Length: 350
Image (cartoon, rainbow, N blue to C red):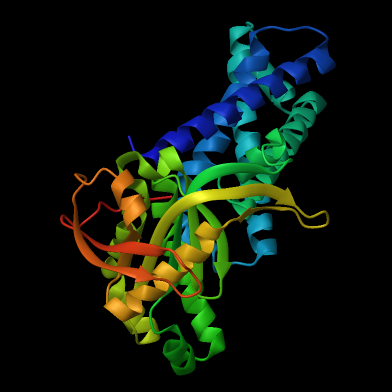
């Protein structure tokens, strides 16, 4: 199963557990008792919310990205209010019949203040879930959990893989399109990389102009050569949508990448605005490796030290380029070009 689907099902399970607990809490407060009704209400509400938010609504992501935040907020509020009411009415009907009530008694039950309170309570729970999911998307996949755990509250040293991914001929394209259309193009391109990032367990560390910096924990980046697959999945997305980009922007965008690994100091910094930062020579080296793509006319260059750590039998072809002294560095770095022997990754969905 794709890692992205595994992530969604894990999130769905957590949502159902949370809403199930919320149902138990509601019954304890409202009725001062506990039975199967609490789970009967909480679990289905969480399941419906999770299926909508994680599986169905993302399919309309292209349309949503053209909406303002206010428009999305109003739409989701109305949608989830309607969903909560319909699900709650269905559950109240089933529960009433199981308790031996007659059909003639159900209209009174469905119009009761207790049901209205339950709908409002459920909407508050949905609001909390939406808030945390949006914060998770804003910070980056998995970053919110690291903040909550306090993983980087104190500086720590760790080994990480980094990729510097840069758009080719970006200056020329920006002059051709103008700044507004150019950044509209960048927004579309950065959306293209979201699927490969989730699929290969990468983290988006930074956006720097037209450049994206990705990072992996060592075991996740090396597993199945994930750090390389990200680039070639992204390339495949660009290839599939190249005609659309040419139609809308008059170009077929291409990217180049440099990869390297090494030790960094990882820490949480800031007060008014907090983020996790990485500091170490590996970032400068990776950036300079990516710059060598222009010199050697290659799309993807990998340091020799990272190449030796990767499983080279995962459908990639290697070419030794050179041993170079990178600008501002004393130690030489062996460079390898890598290409995908079997291009054509399946389409991925968020």
